[in-house]
Length: 63
Length: 137
Image (tube, rainbow over all chains, first blue to last red; front, side, top):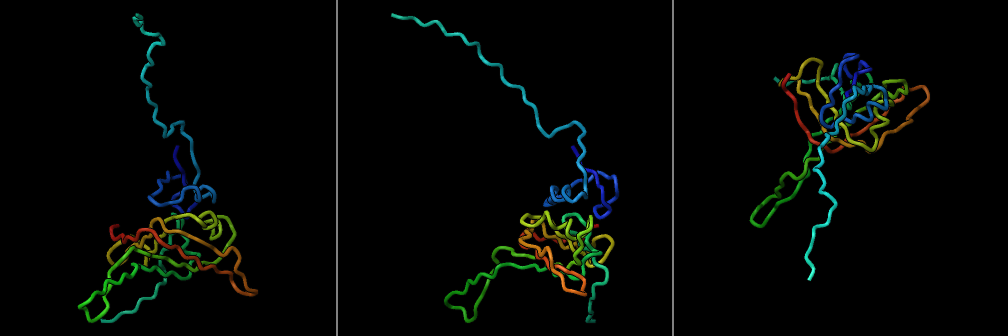
């Protein structure tokens, strides 16, 4: 996901917009200054889960 | 030689939006809380800096058109943003510093401030945040 400039007050039309620290991106989206483009990538990081142990009871000795 | 400066073409950017053509006045104040540390033995009050408490006040012509004043500011009320004021157009330099307030808060904005026969203007103040001066192009 990335942002594209859609208004000249931000920069050149069509350029990728990279918000600097402190910028309220939601406000820019609301007013239509930039547009969000979904390129299929996400910011989520996939992790591999550790394999679970077998659900078997250990044999125990009973007196 | 003493000089006077009148701003004829500064650059005002609010939340990345260039509002220069809507702005007619800008006051950028670099301020620290004044903490008294006067103690016995001193003959005059002394102070030291506390927390930074900077602010920017802008006078803007109101417009409800797309990409104008209201569209830029409406979603910022009650949130934080970044405001930049430069004395002139062109790249930042030691003689054209970009005064920046990052993470400043906009508590309120007059959504209607109109007088018959006059252009509508709004005075807004951004408070708090980190003050920096950009002199590198």
